[in-house]
Amino acid sequence: MLVRKFKPTDLKRVYEIENMSFNQSYGIKMFQQLYEMGVGFLVAEEDGYVIGYVLFWIKYENYGHIISIAVDKNYRRLKAGTKLLLRAISVLSLLNLDTIYLEVNENNTGAVEFYKTFNFKIDRVVPGYYEDGAGAILMYLHLNAGKIAR
Image (tube, helix red, strand yellow):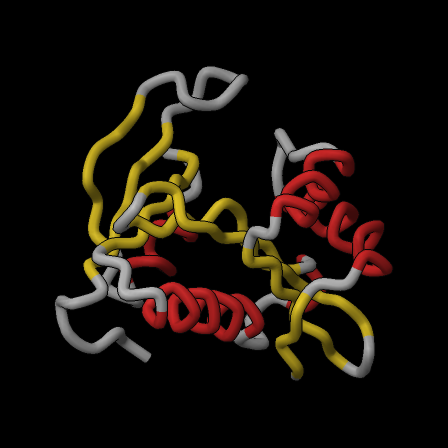
């Protein structure tokens, strides 16, 4: 499995993965705009086929933010999500950031447990964060808090 920088030719496939992974997904134009803004955008590839992606950026001076991460449902449990998240954390760590934040749908307990294995902690729940009224669990990882699990 290869983790590499996103290329514009990956856009359609990333959008497919987004749609199969989330009830409320970013539009294809949003992905294009984020790429053009220069956010961190990585994809996981298996035998030349894009199977997952991660988007991240510096949200505030000392904070990183994982915007979105998803893996094709047919390729889950192959550690693509782990490799993508670890690479994003590594890139953000090199920028001397203090903390990385992300949001998880409160109904997505599997994702919450996944992030906990990397030492992400729950900060709070933001009620009504998503369009369907679901709350978001705000999670954070202090980069200077020691080793990341895995």
